[in-house]
Length: 121
Image (cartoon, one colour):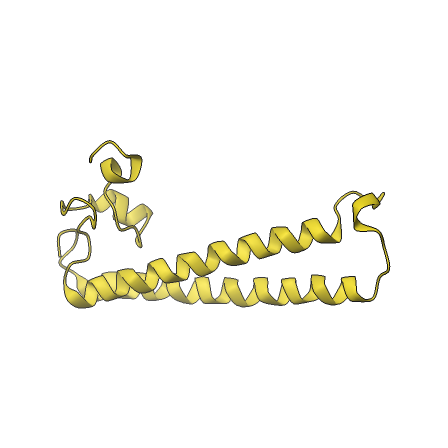
């Protein structure tokens, strides 16, 4: 484990991040269902809604946030598997250690800064 020899601490932080992400997915799912339910009872013309934000826009906004949160959950789960295998903190692109500061900021990251920015090929 390149970034931190404290696998229990890493696992705990990732598990906490996972729980927060699952909670966010649940909340966004409820919000999405609420938008869909609200639009079922209203016979408005979304395209010409004078109130500003349309129901379609809200539905798309929440759906995008939900997709993003689901992607984050996949990333956290992948990081937890890396901890279990013992290769957490190693860039999946170049094989070099990921700096601890990057892992602290983005604990589920799979790449070092150079690979993430495309500077290293």
